[in-house]
Image (spheres, helix red, strand yellow):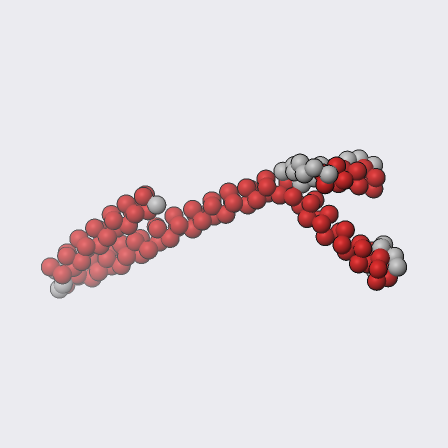
Length: 129
């Protein structure tokens, strides 16, 4: 934030000088050149902080997504649930898989879905769909 604020302060100071120069010399070709310089400085005043803000926003989003990925795939150690999940994965797939946040959510959805499917159709297999 500080570099952006300093950049804005410098740009405003430059624009104030440009306005003063423009006001003191309105006539002739010099006034047009000073007006063009004022417009360029105005664009710089808007473009530089916007570029810095957007770059910072993308860096923030990248860091946030990395943290979320770490959270979702970090191993959870919940008594009974972790052991149950490892037992189920070994039973179904032949190798154990650690319980993660994503796996816990999947397990929490799969159990009631299987019970509801079994009650509604008499078969808990999703292969028929």
